[in-house]
Image (cartoon, rainbow, N blue to C red; front, side, top):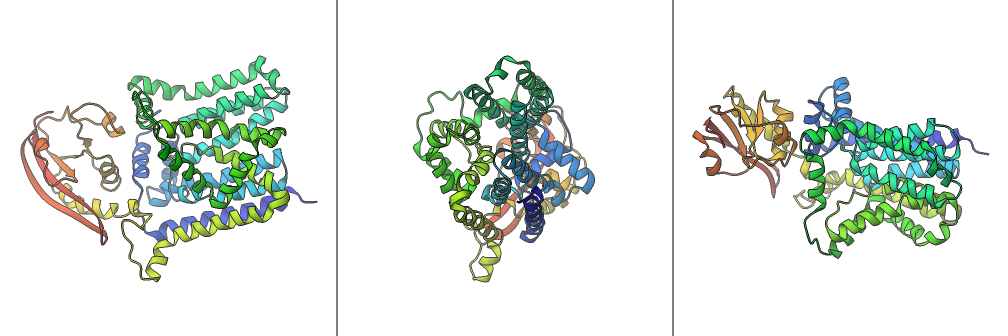
Length: 484
């Protein structure tokens, strides 16, 4: 007879090895921060209850990590590197609770090996705390449904609240939880008891400061969410191609073999529905998958918008296929690990085979060259003390702030309509008469320079990365800002 230690020990060892390996890979790849990481780091330097595009948990996590370890690359990325293994252990607990030790072990291993986790594991993102909160909330929900009392319900509500403060996608947990309660005769009694509703109120109370922040800033996060999903854009039409891309992204996110097994399990939904445990997992897969698929068909959906479905999927796949098709499960995990290793070492493979890295074949190109670019701007900026650093580009601004730490900076947005967090928290309106160091991707900025007393081109910074890819900016000294 196996014990928890028989499965937890190997899972812990695999998680530790993968985490250390990913730490090594980050340094080995020689990459800089990805734009969103630099953006979130900037948030972490000015903690608040909300930001233009996201709630505040990601900024708080980075602030905690960098307070202990400094502002280096690993310190900024560390929250995700630690949270994904924590989610694997939570999935182990979920699988063990619902099925068996073996299912829990393979659920955690499937999660750790997923291409989605392998890719996001190198970068800090809001998906890491979201997936952990989703898993923990499901564990406490199942505990609450099986016991009388308040503790598990309050824990579930608190975790949902933290999930909402990580990413609003956590809201999709609530209708699935309601479906689970309403569709199971054993659980319907909870609909007329106060505990579930108090849990929801607790979640909303935890989200409350972010809602208040949005209210005081004219709801930028909600406006941004509506913009990227194209809600309120009138006739959105049908886009079968985008739906196909979204479904393909889900298949690749969990891995080709595990994706086939998940599709196979979903095709068997009718027979699986008869059993309470598989039905629970389907309830936490199908509604969100259908909702985001509809969004993809009628508007736009990023591949990770349905990421929480993989929590239940990682449990469902071993629960269904361990008894008779273990080899498929092993093959799926093995393929994912081999594929992620190949992706991590693709630059090495390319060099060893004489293949030149290009803009088309380098998957890490968006995280290259930023430090060198900022270092090229530094002497031009430092030679004009007292100037305000200005760009009209969120990506440039994020990396320049991270590397240069300018005393004053602002974005150029004469329209007054914010399109980034910088537009919310910086302004040039109160800086008339000031000099500006303007960094632009454009060689000429006549409409901008016209708002100043004089302009001078200070130089062009070029950072070659590949033969067909380089980073290039132009730096201008703009004197005596006249106002928009």
